[in-house]
Image 1 (cartoon, rainbow, N blue to C red):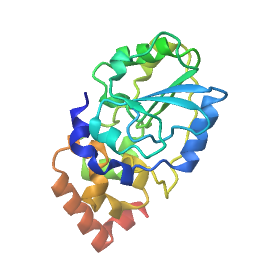
Image 2 (cartoon, rainbow, N blue to C red; image 1 turned 180 degrees about the horizontal axis):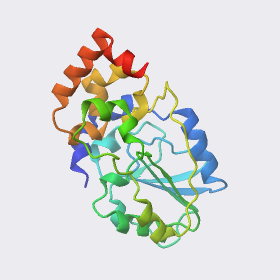
Image 3 (cartoon, rainbow, N blue to C red; image 1 turned 135 degrees about the vertical axis):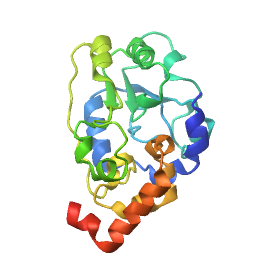
Length: 226
């Protein structure tokens, strides 16, 4: 079970609301799939309406925040999906694979239970040095940061991949790490940070946020990034 989100996920549903533009890209990627298993389902973001969804989520804290009317969630892990082979038209995993204990096993489980395509929503962190938050305030973090979904493992499991870029809008309603790229003051809010796992794993967060506050106040951030 995912102890991290049992700890940090208490206000997740407030700050991680699915962005409708990203949701449309997910819906298009799923095509005509009528039945979908959503692995690492969290609070239900991007579970597209009009499809029969089975949600799998290890954290009881996250399951408790799923809205009324959302698909019923099974408390289980990606590495051991409680479904028979080829039970669903498609499988999905949204911004979650970096939390799995055994990513390859989880991917093979998705391939096992899906008759058709497996759809992932992932960060592309290749230009992480250019993202001001990492570059200026967390310089000790590895750069480039690893993608959430290891593409080499994905290719080993699924074969050829279709990668569709999905731009992050400046007013994105889903508060993942890069969502506030044009709203730097948002990162100063401890509740915003609590919904982003990056901050749970980073060191020196308080000092970094103090530097960001100073840079916003004296115009340094605007001169660098405006």
